[in-house]
Image (cartoon, rainbow, N blue to C red; front, side, top):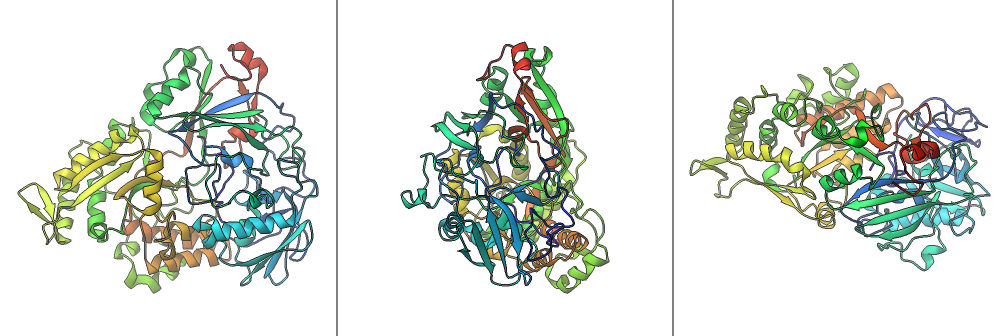
Length: 611
């Protein structure tokens, strides 16, 4: 699905010099920002990237893969339905044309104590849940306690510095901090979902459930059949429709997610009119498979739009909880065996760039030699980081693109010998005990096998017994949460302003927490120290220096084999929608800024419900 279509559920924490815009500590403010002034001043009417007069109505259909078994995205159990974030509202709403600013939504204002040991959110008196019961401070307190006690383990890391939540009145709630707040903590709290305490008196919060919950967002679940579809219906006369943060947004009466077992089947279904919007992530398909009647006659539009967000990293993640991947020389050898140049030329039509950073497509990426500010952070860690950190920016191994990759494979074989592996029977690598070096790639659908198969062949050429295993989504998610895998393909999406969420990706304390995002199992004191520097940075310059220093250490440790990025969105859609003249800088804005265009739909013979 489009990456903009769901509110952040396990929200991205932010870092930076905490700012209240024009307000001062101890005063109410309509918005919060990590760095600098807020773009939107008190009394603003709407975000600049929306059409405040956009008509309401119609349906948009998007795609889901495999199935789901839960409408509760806040717990470790289960597979959540695509789009489920549409039914949940948050205390404040993120502006998608600013790096890290939020404005009043369920909480109409916020204030932070002069000593930064607490903050208060003042709730909008008009705020109600989907059953029209009022949203109160007691609901916010319940939400915080439920997430800490029974929510996904990541909440306990992100909110570790919050001592307690306290209802001051029916509409005001105070969060007490254990220490004066770090820069990101107030914004983390501002993105808290708000759950109904009364509803969860009867329904266990910790359980997966397909019962549509009482929730606080602009949509409710209307229909659900796992494996086939889920339909979200817009709440008519939603209490927040005319708030500045909501005006001109969430214009579709229905958002329908059509589920398919296979990406190839779903691709063909798109051209048959089974769903309306498709973001293309496969370069070969974008280059060769769109010359079809609906595209040629204009019923389907194709566009490439800029992606101004950090691309983060898509990579092969090797599970270092397994001893065979604990040696950096082994990981480096596996990196050398992946032939990106051949893959890009042969499979991707040269449309991608190689990823060389955890923060690709941003100023956070360490693509130059370390400067003085970075060296000041790295020097105390010199004996704990790879020496290459100080010598050069990380660049992934390169080949001549011929497909032979002999030079890199020779280097890989040499590193494996140095790490204690030897060739047995002239064909397989074994350790001192005679155990073979095996590598299993775990997938939940087949489309990626065409990319992994050449990698598998290269690994076998140096004696690694590499295989691919494909399981269903539920099994995949279960194995992921238990770290029961050798290698998986995942993408880390990084925020514009990194902060405490870096702990969930890379810190030692999260390495063994079930369901954490530290998929590689990184336990590195140098990494932990640099994450602390990111969280403590006093301005954006210090933040960039700390993030780049961390980037160097992560990449030169070869914790992952990075893949590729393109810094743009390739989208196709049936031509029955319109959108604002201005795209949100940090989002696609499909589900929350586009609208159904009756005249366009009539021209292509479409109806409000579908083709």
